Amino acid sequence: MKRIFLAMAQSCETQAVSKEGKPLTGAAKTSFIKKCKVDACATKAVSKDGKPLSGAAKNSFMKKCAKEA
Image 1 (cartoon, rainbow, N blue to C red):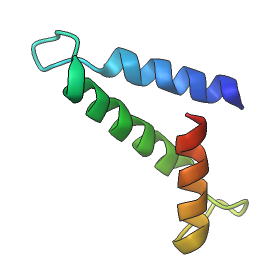
Image 2 (image 1 turned 120 degrees about the vertical axis):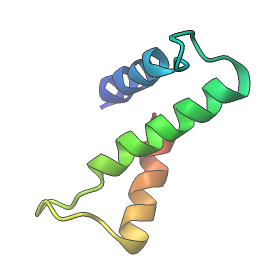
Image 3 (image 1 turned 90 degrees about the horizontal axis):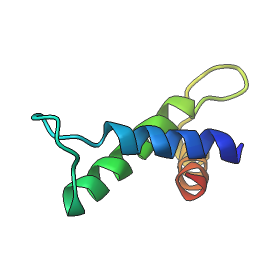
């Protein structure tokens, strides 16, 4: 499981570029990576039945996913 999150973090790092193609730095990079990880976790927030999680279950999953990412 850690490998998935490590790959996700590396993927977010490689995507952190400006419109001009230059690597983001500082607060812009931090903000981008945080949003990227949240977006990646959101796509994985589904139940065993394949239905999107909601409420407390989604909040719990998102916290755990973000912590591990």
